[in-house]
Image: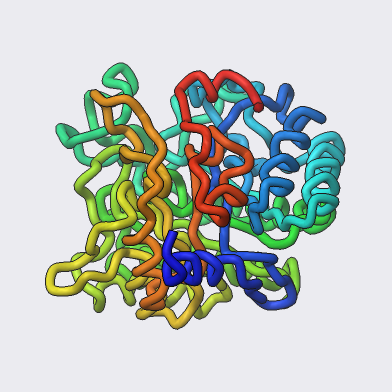
Length: 387
């Protein structure tokens, strides 16, 4: 490894202070659904799983999606509906407090990713199967697109229900706020919101699922108002010292080729209201981090999020692995050529890097990355246990 390459790697291990929280380095464990929390309560095994990643050199852990306590938040995710963690109720908060304490003991920081499945919740499943799934306009999304959704779960008619009422919207926002307060009680170091991939917050951001013409829709800025109002209330609830991370994506599970914005000006219309409301870091979820976002510029989505908001940004998408999420047809292998990643970081495109499946494969990924060692490769079998 050359001295120049090693120097760039070392810059990723410099601390970063966001509001009142100092991360020990810029390496983040990306949120990935695991489904090992029976009854919604994380176990000691879950605590040890996250603690191993902190001990392995990861500066910040963003947990798997944690369902908010809204009756339509959670349905069948293919992992057992009773095994997705919650952040509501004394048992769940106590379980997460054990996780937080274990991670802190290893020198890491940790935030929960608050999650509502929105229109992607499978009707008739989850803790409240009798409750209808919700979305801003009662629309699943356009049909006939490139999708990751099981064909059996794609509706015949894109209109799957009634538009959310003002009362429905208020209840959904307050569910996130309650869970943010619970996260503070559990000792977490901030809050992460899942605003991408076709779930509830993204249902409001995307015109494919939001066709309202009121305060909550009509153009990009108004489609961002649901997320912005949520961030404003969470900021008020948790105070000024803890950071808020916001995940967003162009692509949706309903439509891999969907976009929220087709140029920087449109992206600013989407993200600025959320930034102004109090979000601190934009987690720009893409399938391939090393791809330009807009024509005529090499910057990726994280780079443009940073430019148009003035906030911190985080790159994610295939870091350390030879294929993007949902790719098929070749064996998954670890990647050790990080020159594209280090070049983009050196150019100031983003401030943090989030590592997903590679870190499931090897809890010591961060330490090995720093030393230039090859990590253990991720395998689909790794999804079957908490190693």
